[in-house]
Length: 568
Image (cartoon, rainbow, N blue to C red; front, side, top):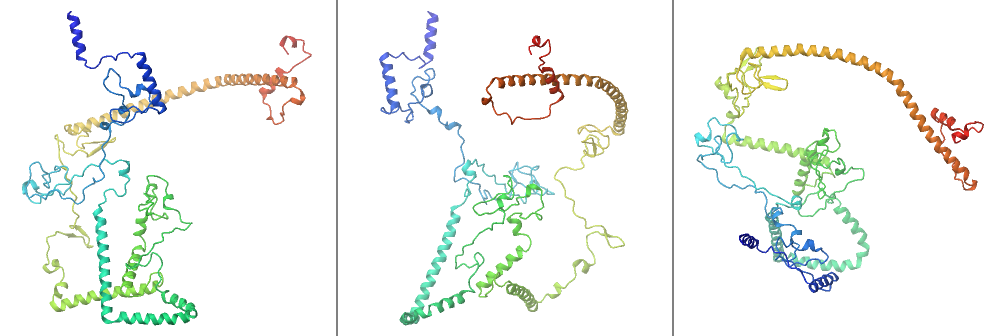
């Protein structure tokens, strides 16, 4: 009784894990008919716990939940879909690195746990990147640096990494739209103001009357003057026509023709390594040098990137000249870089000279008005006082022996620190790829100094090792000589045996080939002559000694009395 009560308690603990009851024959038949109807599309598909349809062609062992896990659950395909718990949570579309953000203003008081050198709370003294101060911010409480801003860690997906507009602020574009809207509004107001002035002065009425008269006259003589007017217009506006992409004027819209002739090599074909310089297909730009990974000199290659082209040669001078041409055109001067470069160059040089003269005149006028020329012409302070605090020593030739030396760059790590009774620092001795102490030739960093005794023991060990090494080398040489003599004798004896074995092997191969050839000949002789294959294209070559010997051994001899016994 006690055992039965214990089993009932155990079964009560496993709630809902009872094996499903066996279905009747009628229920089983109905279930199968429903499955067939679902597969044919006559009955609606089964719905899982999430309300999604289950494909009727999916097997039962995939869609149904086992009874020993949870018999109350309906068929589902949730376990076949991506699980939300195992999916990576990527950064949203609006998250990006903060730029120019000052989270907290710099403090004026040292905080506990901050850097002793600069006073920032985000790092310690050993990680500080500022210049080591003579007296740190911990003790002075002055010049405390602001804390570094820690950027957020972005986990971008495939599209987020390749989005060229990722992190772009839309407000930046709105500023441009507002600026153009203001310019457009100013143009409209200016145009309306001009129309009002012309109406007030009466010019607009006179222009309307003159246009009517011209219309009447043009009706009679339009055909005669058509050709002449076209020529006049061409001559009139020929000077103002600019090359595409060369003239700069904010009032006109210019289309830049970014064309490439057939002989030019495309930028993306100069180096096919995928890790080379990046080529932007939208702007056709390759800013970096495509040959940087090959070790070639940028000055020797034909193309070293857009950045190299923009900052080398006469590119800077050309850009300055082009800028001067644009500015001069806006101010009314009729100059062009491609149409008349000589005139533009002379005008640019004269402009530079006039600019320098204007600066000199301005300087002289200020000096005449306020004075102070004596301060500009005064000799250096060292010559006036005939003394200086800097100590200098000169040789008889005038070269500086001492003084005006460059300041030695100091490290933030401790230098010239002697430990464990050593008289030299760690790293003053080098032996067989290891650092050590020069005072005792020790290669262990935390060891105690042994002085001259340590040096003597190291030297004696090296000498004994040299003697032992020489003796071992001599013994190995003698053994190698004996070994070579034995190998020579063995090679001379074994070479003859090897030759004989090779000859026998070749002869056996030739005999088998000859047997096959004879069988093939017998087959061909049994076939009718008209049905024999065309074998004139067979390979013909000189027979070897083994093939000749096999032919002689297999040759049929009808006069031989033993031919019948040999099967020939």
